[in-house]
Amino acid sequence: MKQRILALCAALSLVSVFIACQAGGTNREASATGSSSSSAANSSTNPASKPTIEEIRAVLTAHDKALNDKNIDAVMATFSNDPTTVVMGTGAEERWMGPPEIRAAYTEMFKDYDPGTMHCDCSQFKTGGSDEAGTMAWLAASCACEDSLQNKKREYKLNVSATVTKQPEGWRFISLHMSNAFEPPVTK
Image (cartoon, rainbow, N blue to C red; front, side, top):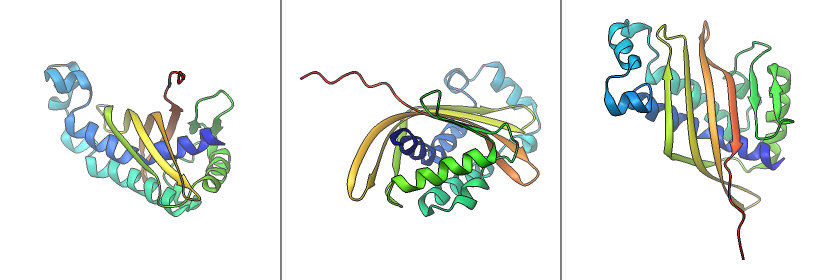
C-alpha cells in the first residue's frame, strides 16, 4: 500500500515537471546545445501542431486537482480509455492496465493520504519532449515528495515518467510510471 501512496504523490509533481521541461526545450541535450536533431525538427515543423505548455498543463492540472479532491471520475478523465493504458509502480505486481484496474488502484490510493497534503519537488532532474506531429509527449523526473496521513508526515523520493497522447477530447495519459528512488541503507 505504501508503494501506491508514493506513486500517487509522484503524479502530483507532473504539472511542474512537464511545464519546466517544455519551457527548456524537448530534451536536456537540445536545451544545452541548441543543435540536436530534435531542435532542428522543432524549428522546421508547424508550431500549431506542437503541443503547447497550456495544453499539457490542463491535463496535469486536472489530474492534480482530482487527486487532492479524491475525485475518482476526474482522475479517470485524465487517462485514455484505451484498454492498454497502464499505471505502474515499483514492483512487478504494481501494474494496473485499462480503465477498470486503474480506477480500482486509485480508489485504494485515496484511502491512504489526507487530502491537500501532497507536495513534490522535481527540480533536481527533469526532462521531456514531444513528437514532431504534436500528438504525443513524454516526461521524466526524480522528485522529493511529502504528504501526511492522520497528521503523520512522510518524506520519500520518487522517479516518475509518463506518456500523454492527444485524443479528440484532449490530452490523456497512456502510461504513468512511478517508482521509489533507491535509498542506500542507513548505517547506525
